Image 1 (cartoon, helix red, strand yellow):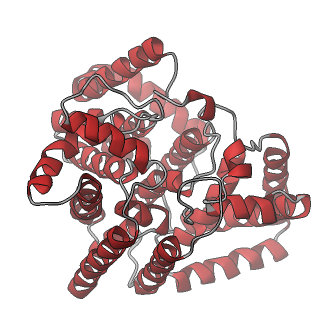
Image 2 (cartoon, one colour):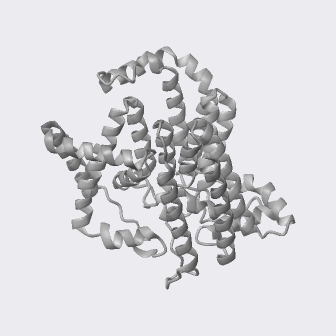
Image 3 (tube, rainbow, N blue to C red):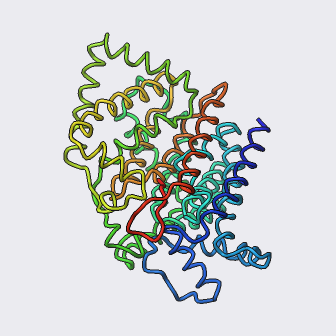
Length: 433
């Protein structure tokens, strides 16, 4: 496994030099982040860029590193990018290697195309994932106070992480009481699980408060923030209004299927098995039909079209929408694929005897993290993918094919970003997710 890590490091170094050589001024949201960072470096802590939607943890944590790198002759932009490229992903890899107990799968997550590209720009996504990973790892190790510190920092890097803080606390509690609730017994109904969980929470309320009191305090602080702020986002509220956008779940399913932490040869076998069962079993046909109708209902009634999707041609999503999703024949036709993917993934998890209730819980939190976002941003799928990787501890022989393919995809994305310019209504025109 060692050589893959060294190759990835050398690739990161090469791509970082490449991007910083070609893209010498802040790109897209970097403009707002760099502006804010510059004011903090000038000790102007009262300033806030009105386009920024997330809290300032990114700038607080980067501050000492940027001061040091600036003294070494690096520009602020290059310094910020280098921190995102090398420090945070390295920490994430080390933490996930311990959490997954599998360096190969940890590396696979770190190079997922949904997040890898943003490691080379000054965005909040990389830091957000690092802090969540640290919070969960310390929680699993029963260092509750340290976990809460990273949880608070995580929420202060991206507000929606509060959902995942709640999730990791619930998951930690369920992991501790797994044998009592018999979550691995597929014969037990979901209602049984809910009833058993409710009764146990009532019984263990003192233990829950004792163990998770710091995390509960963070949640209370967040409620206070919502009340005083009047909403979730800090700035640019006109473009970040909460909407009910349930179709996000449909967009997430193909991404989960492609990036699922399982060998693609094995995934193909499960796909063939699921299709065969669908053709031969009446019950399987009925189940698929119900799921298909739900997908069609969601796509028909709860698809939100944000103005950016129609106007900002710097994003791949702009072209996916214009060429595919805007046309009814494709929009509704894809529902057959969404439903099939759901059936295949469910089949994999049932055969692998994954914990049913915890899996449903993960789907619920994934849905809540996505369905209120007006924008279709593949990078928003990264944290749900992280916890699917946590949950699905499959003992796979090798994920090398995925490592190679994801690396090639990442190189192509970055090459197109750097080399393919086009006309648009913005100062810089480069393709990105």
